[in-house]
Amino acid sequence: MATLPQFRREGVVMPRTVEITIETERVTSVTRRLYAVELWCDECGKLAIMITADQAAAVSGCGLREVFRRLSLCLIHFTEEADGQIWICISSLGC
Image (cartoon, rainbow, N blue to C red; front, side, top):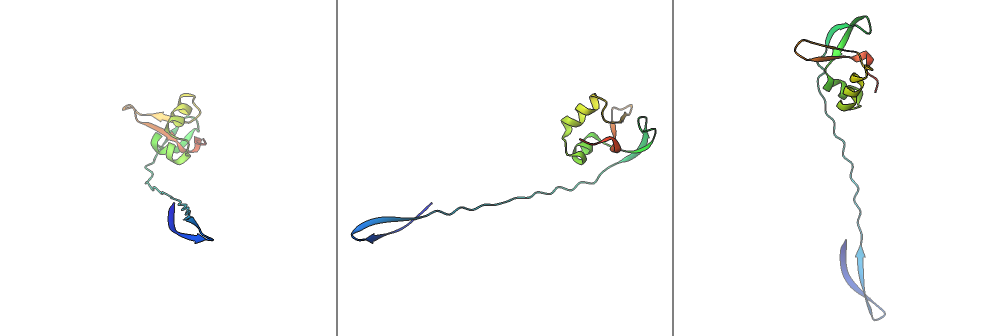
């Protein structure tokens, strides 16, 4: 809040103030390349496009924790490789 010079009105000194409000808006955009592979999905019974858990969270917008919760409840189709890599069937996403 800024205080402007005072002025007189009928012999009384009155302070003069001005209040300024500034509103701002920020938009952040992040773009990533989607790394996908085509693997057999047992639940779909066909070849399907599979993505990583991180990518599934980004694509679905529900977050990594929710993706793993849905994986543990078998609500998302997935396959796991011998090295522990999890591939998620993109057609089964829908958070």
